[in-house]
Image 1 (spheres, helix red, strand yellow):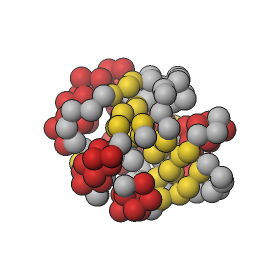
Image 2: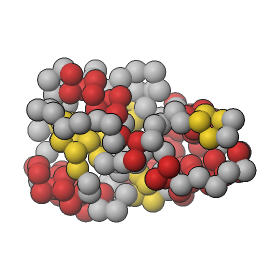
Image 3: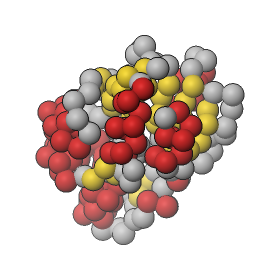
Length: 177
Ligand SMILES: [Mg+2]
């Protein structure tokens, strides 16, 4: 099976760095559990725009992000039986740092950069693992399977024939390893 892996908040624990930036920009201490949608308003600012500007203007901060718990072992396990492709909609300014980060933590896998405006359906993959509600719903709407990585901002997405919520990398390996 060809498996597409989202990067942020699926394989990469991006939120600690992002929340530090939210606090720097807005002066508001914000926690991951408060985020109910990706484009949430924090103070007078849009979370989505804060993330976009951070990634665009200071992509080097992405070096410091840690993998999501279990992702290193989980991806190695999946790669024994499946083809792995990272798919990210991060800003194009992050391409060098994203490629270096993935190679450093997980190894040499193909990486497809969709850019923020495109969906992830244009890739010939059989299964998408993603936390993003929009990507998950779009991909599933075309009759493809999605494992939705549980996050506070995707609680409105219901399990369907094509969408299965997973709470951890251990769940992912158990389901498809
Ligand atoms: Mg994501």
